[in-house]
Each structure stands twice: as C-alpha cells, then as structure tokens.
Length: 407
Image 1: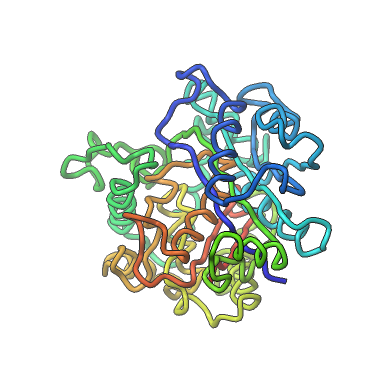
Image 2 (image 1 turned 90 degrees about the vertical axis):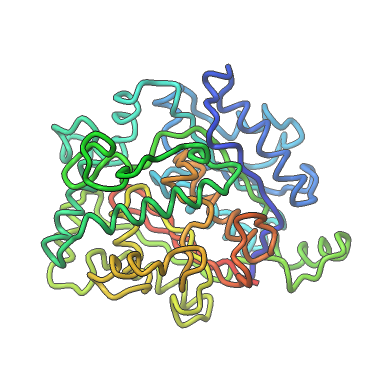
C-alpha cells in the first residue's frame, strides 16, 4: 500500500536551544505545529505518533518522549505514541514504523517527529554520549572521540581494498558546504572557508582521527524535524479539500531496512570475500529499489545521503549503485554529485552542512525528499526531480534504512 507524505517541517539547525533556554519540549512545541500547518492537517486528525531520538536520557536526563510530545501539543492527548532508537537511523526506523501502522489499516494519519538536543554539554561529553551507539567496552575504547575513530578505520579498510585519495573526501565536503550556503535552515550556511580548508593543511583543516580531518566530520547539532504521513484513503480526501491532484503528492514508494553486527569489526569480518564492503547496506538499497519498482540509481534524480563523515558518503555512493566499488572518488571529482551533476547529492547540505541532530536526521531526509518531488524545495530545488533516494545509517553502518520518495 502506498503511504503519502502530506507535509512537514524542521527547526533551524544552526540554533543552540540550550543557550536560548529551551530544550526538547520547545523543539516539539515548535516543529509539530509547523508540520501540521504545512500538511494542512489538524492535530485532532492524527491517529498515531512516532518519536525518533537517540540519547535524550544521556544528554538531558529525560525519557518518556511520547508524553513530552503530548505536554508540548495538548491536542495530541490520548494519541498512541512510540519512541524509536537506532542510533543515527532512529528517524528512518520511526518513518518505517509509522508507515507500517498506516499500511496495517489501524490508523489513517501518522505524525513522525525526530529530535536531539546535544549542544547543552561540552564536546567530550557529547562524544561519549554518542559513543553509546557503538559496542561500549568492546571497540574505540581508547578513542577520545569514538565515531571519528571508527570511521577512520572504515577509511583505512577502504584504502586497503581500493586505494583512497583524501582529495576526494575534501571535494565531497566542499560540495556539501556549498550546498548548505543556499539553505536558510542549515547549520553551516554562514560559515566561511579560506583556501586550503578542504585539503591537507594542518592549520586550516586539522587531523581528527586517521585520514579524517575537521571538515570531513559532521558537527554536533540541535534540532527537530516532523512529517505527516497518510493512507491512500485519507490522502485522497485530503487532496480534494486542499485542491491538490493526488498524483502530485509525494509518496513512499519503496523501502529497505537491514541491521548488521553492532561492532565495525563484526561487519568487516562478514564482508571478507564479498563484492561490497557492507553487503547489508547494498541489500537494503536494492530492497528499496525493488519495492519502488525502479531499476537502480540511474532512475534517481536526487539522493539524500547519510554523510556524517565524508568517508561514509564515499562508501554509501558505491553501495547505492552510483559508482562501482572503489570508484566513487572519480564520480565526486567529475562533479557528478553537484546540483547540476548526473546524480545531485544532498542539495540542502546533508549532515555535514545542514546539520545532524541525530534523532531528527532520518525524518528530515524524508521531508526534504518530499519537497524535492513536490517541487517546493525553493532555492534547493533540483529541476524535474521525481524520484529521490534517502539513505539513513545508524552506527558504523549497523542499521540501514533506505527509502524511495516519488510522485
């Protein structure tokens, strides 16, 4: 059954909610009403709510986020809710669960919202909290910043397999930040980068871990995103009252969802002798293509790609079929991922440039994908976009959620 995306919203990812005196409650209170207005749906029409979040208990001490949602939006009192945690893929899993609720016939309209407050603690504490999504005590034990260390290991394995040119990582980052400069909601929209910022200059682009430098790494972000999903029956009635053609309303056309061993080493051991570095990642993407009845990356007009690190993006590009294994660097170098390239990637800046409030990211990806296919993405619009792939990854590619958003 088709699930339609009626609308959505995100907060400004450049904001520091803690400095403003706000927090998770304020994020809910801001993003959900904005999403309902954009979707032209009343709170009383919501049948079920799904909340995505990684580590509110660690960053704020707050659990029971479904109840906090109702506290922020009293008109949702009595609406059932579920909280989802799958590291950085929390948002993707929440969207899938909401879609399953609609497909089952239990509900006609679902609210999905994801959020994370992370800038209320120092960088070392934030890194420790985020490290809870790795195998605690079993990997990255001596690393000050666990995730840069683990993805530097991914870069080393990639280099051993295929050869890695760090210049390609810098080119990806340059493209991400250039796109973010056009996005009025991006964390990095006002950032400036002197010449040399994406190269090997230790002053302008210092090493963080291994081959990864400062501008290869996503930053800590605060923020929330929300979307409203609907069944075909509700969407048809909604389109009539909104004066819309249902054929032009974005829909979730296909998905893939797979989970692998928690540790990076557990996944790499499985990949020995395999064509792809992360076979389950490739499988999830192929599942999404199959369910959407498309042949592959050649039918995608845009990709919303999980680029928490530049090496993550390089690996993901190959697994989605944009380039054969070991050759994504050439695609980046050729300008193929630029807004006017053969496969535009992250026109809004992605996780590197737009920001990465962990629980919000997978929801934000679907929101931006829907805006692209609806033709309402404003300065971020890729002309003629009809099929968009979203690829949301949790941990060291542990949880993978791929979706095709189409019209």
